[in-house]
Image 1 (cartoon, rainbow over the protein chains, first blue to last red):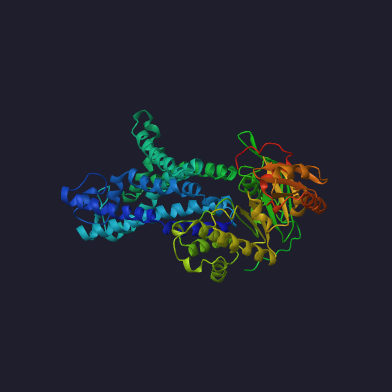
Image 2 (cartoon, each protein chain N blue to C red; image 1 turned 90 degrees about the vertical axis):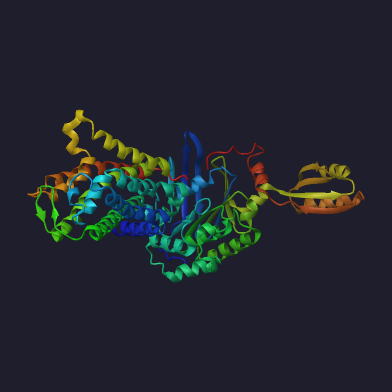
Length: 269
Length: 319
């Protein structure tokens, strides 16, 4: 089965790379930080973790941008791809073409899911690389002052950037999983993409309700800042561990539901 | 194009009691099918009769409410990959990736097959459907006929033993239809079994020896075309100098099962050559001038009419 999932995954990447919107997503992920950089240079430094480093070092600039784009930036990219990945094939009728080949429904769906996650990881990696390069060009490769106020070397900070972006990717993947679920259930791109965006905004909305303050650490949007753990002294780990399991808790139910529904569905289009 | 070897001596298609309803409305109701290896089997019925639903069930895309299916002895709903091994199909029109070229579509789809279809198999399939020259163009730039041919090529790269084609002549021009017939004959000669659905009897009668006819989700006939023709009777149109007199003469001839006036012509159904000879003799003896006696093309509508004993045309159901 793993071999067949890999075949489906490879096929999905092949299709993603052949589509314009994939490259538009990458373009958005890379142009975004450059636009933001231009605004920063014009308006002065923002507030927030690591923001005091702006103007002194380019290392960590990616994480400053990440904080500011909050849930909406990655949600838009996640929604566009996740909401479309099954629904567009359903609408175009190509699902039935693929499902008469030597792949099971589970193979196809899991291959699509992995391709989706790969796309998101690549888009965020592209974002990170472009942001860091742009930041270093603007402000140089100098030591960084972390969230606790301690100075860490530029190389060390750069090394921490990589896991920080990976941790940031986890809740983004959870949002994409919901989009994937909508894509399977609705079989239509527009409601799936729109529904994912509404879902992401709702999560953000729930996060500001003070009546459920006790639940805030377990909300998905809160996990978008779990990378702070890496830039605190002493470095904790609790936030990261929680980000892993909370993200998984949000991601797995829609994925399982999508698999169950897709396996029971008649492909009658 | 080689056909994938298969050890199974089971029937390519064996279905019993297939049933499927959409929102309580039966689309397929108790369909039995038995397709033998190496034959081109016609599956006939008007639009909405249940052909496409049946084919979707055969390919595992739609779950039957009742009944059993075996493709080379395997159930496509319990052993989906095992049953589909060596089976290819197109349901309705071929749906391919419009943003990819024809060649890249085949490359992608053959990668899903995992049977090691190399570039040479893809090129051979493109050559067979005469698309080599346009294989580098995007499918969005293809005509409907070219898409049909690419769809068939996408089946061929699986090197199937059984191919299910749903109305493959739709959208083809006469040259395309002739090409398709030649291709299917060629594939059958190489040992491939073809299950061909159509709403046009003329489309399958040149290719198939055996057919099943479905109407309102039920099989109303299953057997040879020869027998079908015999059951439907032989019909002629007669152009004669005095049609009204010819009508009364024909009606009196033994073996004439049906006779009617159609404009300035006489339509008659005959039981055999003796009856036809008797009609000719009667007309000559009455000194009527015969301008033409033309056999009528056997149409699906006529066959339905005969098979359903003059009942109204089958109601459309979800296909």
